[in-house]
Length: 198
Ligand SMILES: [Fe+2]
Image 1 (cartoon, rainbow, N blue to C red):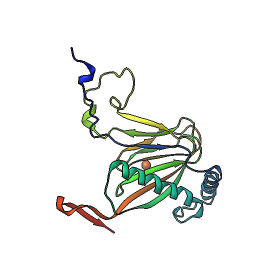
Image 2: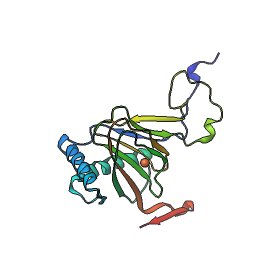
Image 3: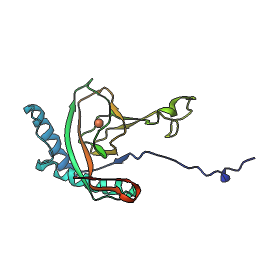
Image 4: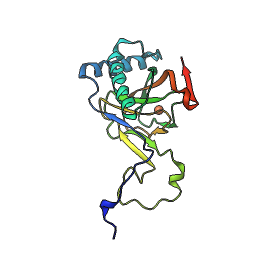
């Protein structure tokens, strides 16, 4: 009989997804909500990166991204926020499955709660879905997708290549999405896997 103590469980090739709670103080969160509403009324699509109201969020993203790089033990020169945009979905609105090309890390911030409406990530290992026994309880090892709720003032961070979609919203749904990319030297020349991004 095998003793459970004999078994070492190795979690190989896992995918990190950060869920960060209480990202901004109330006033700064409400400023963003107000700004999104104004921009939507004006139907303007000006970049958010330079707007004062998003600077506290950008500061937090930079801090969280540092933790991300530390957790992954990645060596890097610089990580820059390449873009940031808002989305306001009306009930029934959704986003098809997609990933964020030409970036390294992506994320989304929710300035208001959307009840249980959230974002669904899909298992990138297509071969893992060939044989699927019934799962008695859902966990990270037996799921083909995973939903995170859009909680008020929370932020999700994930690898840009990780496919995700937004199921049809049941109420108005505001979000601020962003991408981060490495610049400078990436990799080491000695490994023959080296590039320099400006
Ligand atoms: Fe996305």
